[in-house]
Structure formats: C-alpha cells, structure tokens
Length: 126
Image (cartoon, rainbow, N blue to C red; front, side):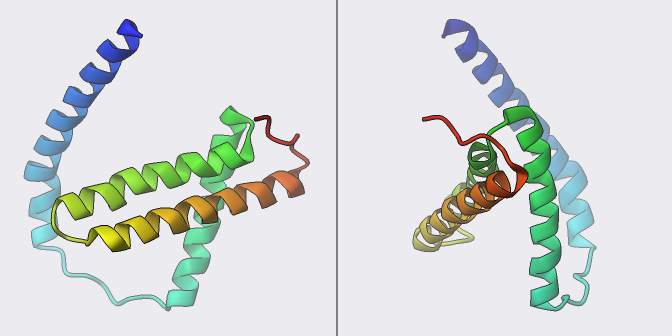
C-alpha cells in the first residue's frame, strides 16, 4: 500500500502541475481566440460519439477482458473529468452532475453488457 500511496501522490502532483501549466499557457490562450464552429446535427453527433466511444471500449476491453468493467472505466473517467470538475468550478450544478453520473454508469454498463454478449466474451466474475 505504501508504494501505491507514493505513486498516487507523485502522479497527482505531476498531473496538477502539468495540467495547470498546460491549461494556463497553452489551452486557455488558444481557446480565447477560437470561435466555436457551427453545431452538427445532434443525432449525428450522438451517432459519431457513440461509435468512437465503443471503439474506445473495445480497446480498453482488450486489456481488461471484462466488457462491463471496461464500460465502468469509461464512465468513471468521464464522471471524474466532467461531473466532478465542473460543479467544483461552479460551471454546473451538483444535481445535474449526479444525474449525469448515473446516466453514464448505467449507460456504459449496458453498452458493456451488450458488447460482451455480442462478442462472445465470458460472463464477468463477481
């Protein structure tokens, strides 16, 4: 456990410093001068991101060998990066973040289940 805490602490500090510097000096200046483009059709947007998401799930599943756990990994990462960060920064309410987290967990778990059934993966062990 001590080795894990050292790695977790070191990685957290590294991530904080790197992302602070890169966001402040690289991303924010670009974003300030980058006008948003015209929005795509919402249905098409969802279709494209669904395909990309499932390709990522397939890639993760190649290492994890558990489609439901692979879906949970995607959901938990998205929750940590969006549904935790934005409410803490005052850009989203906690209620919508909680609902988003639930939708992500249920959605990606079901996507993982379907992927597992259709790919012939062995059932997940408890």
